[in-house]
Length: 310
Image (cartoon, rainbow, N blue to C red; front, side, top):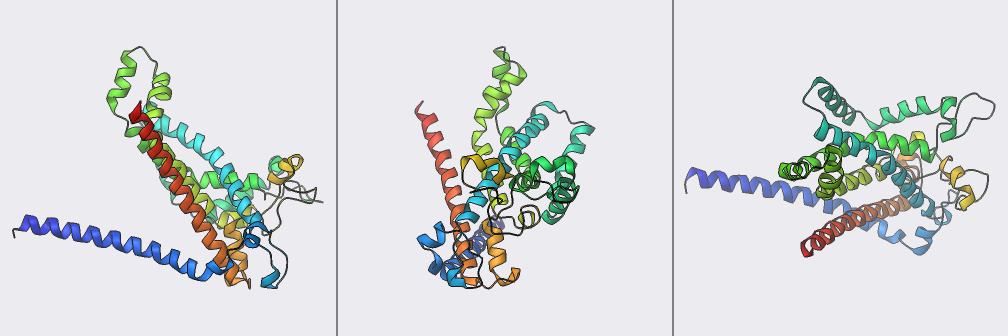
């Protein structure tokens, strides 16, 4: 066996071991959560809201944290995805290799390395100013805004995921063949028309990946939720039932909880005494993330098959 074959075999072996190790870690986490949290999964646990009691058997469920996670994720994506896509379009389609583009890319790199707790503290310092009271509410007897709400937390989450989504969107645009652009421009389309009608449709799989990445980052974060959404299991404010259509704005401007904050406050890490329910909520969170990834893959496969049939 010559050295070239040995090197190829060694490279294959190392890659296989790395892949196997990664899969084992993921499966180990999932199996551990299943063993410790499966006993909590029940209709009451999923459909009931948390109850303020130290008795674990009477402490309710995770319905409002689940909805809180979904609301926060939706707000974050609504803010982050258009922002990321427009930035990626500028960097890939319009910006030349000049100092401005280099500075912008450096800023994106720096932002991706900032800890989420720092982003949360910065957001809290900014959004407690009275000018931003429309995103939360004013503190009674003070000239400060509360700075804690679904809107504030969603915007902060968008800032957190921005560098990752920009990079993914930019890579998706880069993967579109140059001859697509050249053919469109040769037919008389403008630069903007080429980007909107040719480049973006051709890069949709990569853009879906960017959305999936954003969902995973937002739904799994704790530090930003802890500081900018409030340390409460209650959903909305005291003006009425939070789920009523007439209270949607008040709910978005109010505090709440997510699955990650429920896990933190229910576990010993957050001085809670509901360890089993924390494991149950963690298992539900993992299931939601897996379902989202499977749906994303299914949508991508379905669209590719539809395109092949056309």
